[in-house]
Image 1: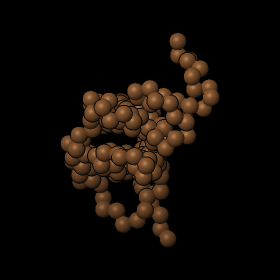
Image 2: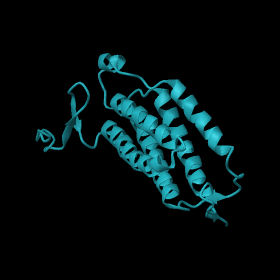
Image 3: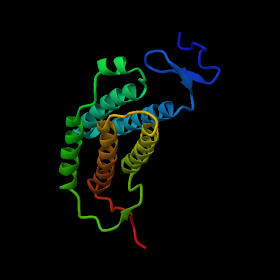
Length: 181
């Protein structure tokens, strides 16, 4: 059965069973990461036909985000220690991917206005949701300990999504919409 009715009063369970309000900073953080994961799923499906490797990269990101969500949803230190952890190597992977994509792009001297094509626009949606998720995790970190790797990963992921957005436009021969003040 998909519905339990246990959340009808405005609370939800964390990993381990502790109940908290649905507006708890922890719930906001892992919920926003969940939203990001859904947007990235859409982006991955948009890129699947291209067969250029970005689909697979994004599927790996989704798995990392699931790990991250689980960690953020876990209050109990003993349970947390037994869970799969997000490894710093995942940040390194994103950095290498950013560098590879960046090498394919023209130098940037202006801000980029979101859009350019559908895939580029979806990349920017993912990027901005990622930034919001990062802010939610920072807010949560004011109250509880958050592994630094989680914040690094989200920060780097938004950079990856930015360069991927640019690549999605440039690789199709479309001009980037640049902000000129």
